[in-house]
Image 1: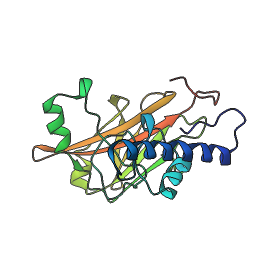
Image 2 (image 1 turned 90 degrees about the vertical axis):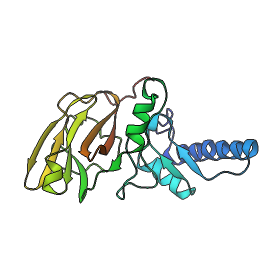
Image 3 (image 1 turned 135 degrees about the vertical axis):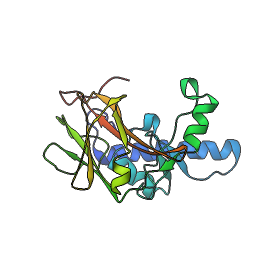
Length: 205
């Protein structure tokens, strides 16, 4: 949904997305009765423009990074856990359903020039991303983080945890996943990243 068609202007893209979202809601209302305005981005792909559109249309929207909802999450990019297939057994369900939002003071994502990245869609050419977590020292020392399924580079300094990708950012969707044990349960934090091909083109699905 975040891809403009060839030659498409942003205003035309917005109208097209508005029509797709509202037509889908209308179909749901017709089939099962009026329903809350809740939207799930296909594949979790979203950017600031799409978030703004869903907000303007009155929707709560879900992305596809995992974790429980935390106070710092926005209503247009809420996390959701996958359930089904390899993620569908009961132990996995119980683990995720009992997870807790990471009790953070703040979380920010920056590039290698320490410039803030507020959009899941990374600027072209981004090679390194760092997630900066501020929390109680005791918690920082318990957090384990992964990037695209591999251990992420992590360092605690000056009362903050700095977590960076230890492998090349791939074209497509990737994410940081961080957890910390808490009395038989887990604190959970996830951040989704979307990156185009190196030449600025979109990857194939």
